Length: 381
Image (tube, rainbow, N blue to C red; front, side):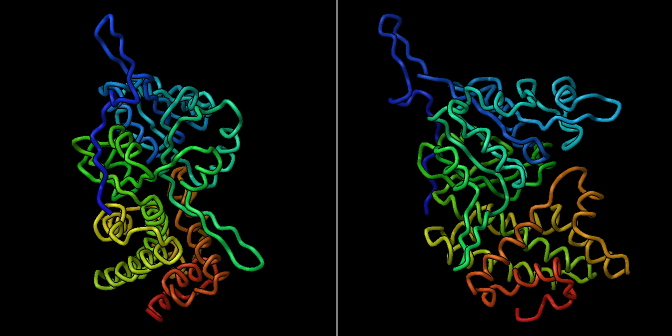
């Protein structure tokens, strides 16, 4: 599908108030951005959004970011540290954050008065967050949301299973439209201002224009497309394939093998999305950053690849470790998405009796959870 026109006009006819006596017009309301999440990726996106909010007409300068409060040994509360030093030293150290980005520990205070909500929490925490925000009067009923959460939600039944993207989950819980953001974006690189691209799947041209305004900049180029499901599924499934890439690295195999795994993985990602979300576009995987580019980046530099490599190496060295142990040892408080998504996808395909159509997804699960020999990953490909 073709990208939407994305030029943001804060004085579009439905959105301005005219003062005939003064001969002026002004926005009917200021757009106010709230960031629900403060991990490395959330902080990097919050930095981009806050920089843009400070310069865009029609936007409130202040951007609030929800931080799950914790004590940093010898330094005090994390919110105080962020607001004083303008760095998130726990999750994105040595990256300067703009002064108008404010860390807040109460999620209800973060979203108070906000019209644009970015959700970027680990998916394990989302149900509790939505439970708090869905209460009457907490969020603006005319607000819009965007999800940068990587994962899926599966509902298992006696007669099968259903699968949902997180934009869908957010829309249903809060009754507001939700877009999806995903692309070849390593958080630290985005935080340092290195050039990259991202894709935003949107439900309408207005969402395209607003989110383009929030995130687009000289070093962070945004391409909105009308494919919320495709962007969201690509962001979830690429973490499963990145684990397979990590298994390849853990076995000490070379670029030929890794390239083959990525090719098979991209095919399964696209096939899965189009089979179970038929309104999605195949171009999302081949033409946009949310597809092949994101898969490549994650399979060479992401946390899922890193932990999957360590998982196989530890097993080969006779000192096996669980993914929970590796998450604790290697990720500095961050959470793995790939291992949970691999399980959800496997259970869904098993319930739908479609495992034979996705041999790589099947093997990633069995290596991770059923002690399958990683060398068997190449069977049936």
